[in-house]
Image (cartoon, helix red, strand yellow):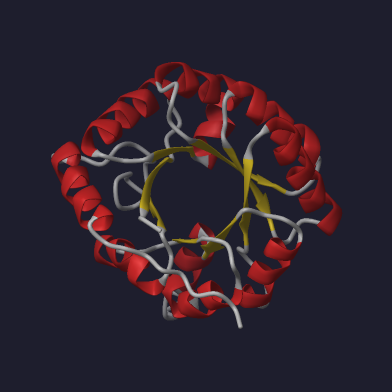
Length: 235
């Protein structure tokens, strides 16, 4: 499976999100993500604007759905999203509802294992309930809180190989990765590489990072696309 590069538009302004998305597409990014901050700020309007501007591009709506799964997935699908995100810590019935809506409206479901007591079992749970992808995720507040308390900051790479080996669906690693780590994700068997805060977005202000972002993104995309991912199948 050829790696896919996704940029997370963790912005709070649709105009800046559209500008960043256009820059990202020129640089070779494959998928756009309406990040949670953008969805909170702009809602369905933001997803519709992204769809209008980029008619043929996959759009991930990072809803982090915990309840009302069918309706949330339906609304985002009708607004133009091609992928929606549901949390493994949601009730099993919520995940089933999102999966059902995905089938009904032609969108893929990404299950997020953030905050699962056992991240590997969380990934398997998501696959068993019909999710199309697993997001192996260490949360923003968790990382920053532990670091502020003087603890080692956890990384999705800590268990990424085990998560990949436990499921038969593609895995994406999210949460505090350095640029170098993100580029190496396909080597762990995780073909969906997401670039977001703090790689391309200022993690404190949630604005587009300064510097020559387009040139940097182009080099990143080339490095990721040059790889080949064979994610292991579980025994």
